[in-house]
Image (tube, rainbow, N blue to C red; front, side, top):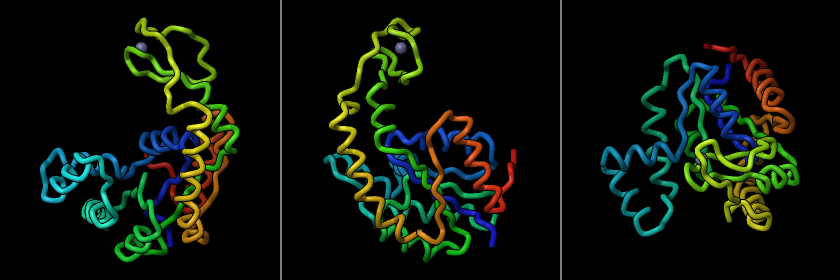
Length: 215
Ligand SMILES: [Zn+2]
C-alpha cells in the first residue's frame, strides 16, 4: 500500500523545521503541526480550544486526550482526498500513536526520522545567535556580527551547551518508545551535511514510498 500519512521526527537542532518547510513547498500536502492546530482551536474559541486555553493559561500542557481529539478532527477533514498528510509534533506518546493507528489506515502510515549526531546538534545550536531586536536567527555559517536590522546578535540561554544536552536527552527519552513502536514503518534519514544533500535524501525516501513530487 502506498504511504499517505507521514510522521516527521527529529531532535532539536536536527533540521526538522527546514525539512518540514521543504516538504510544504515542494509537495502538495496537508501539513499539520500540533502547535499550530492547538493555537487555531484557541483562536477560534471552539469547545476544545477553550479547554486548551485554560490549561495553557496555568502553565500546563495539553494532555493526550485533547491532542488526540484535535488531530483526529483535522485529519478526518482531509481523509480520502489524494493529498498526503504530514504530521509534525504528533504523535508524541505511544498512546497517541496507538490512537492514530485506530483512526487511520495503519499500512499507509510512514515515519521519517531525521538523524543527526548529538555532537553535531550541539555544534549547530551552540553557535546559533539570535538578533536582540528582530529575533532572526543565525547559524555557524553566517559571518556577521550585527543583524541587517541593526540589532545586536546574542546567544539564547536555551542554546547553552548544558541546556542543549538536556533537551537532547529528554527528546531521546520521549521518542525512543515511539521509534520502537514504528520500527517496521520508519526510515532513518541522515540529517548531516548541506541542506541540499539532506532534502535529496528526503526526496529519495518519499520516492521509495511511492510519493512523487507533486508541485
Ligand atoms: Zn535583526
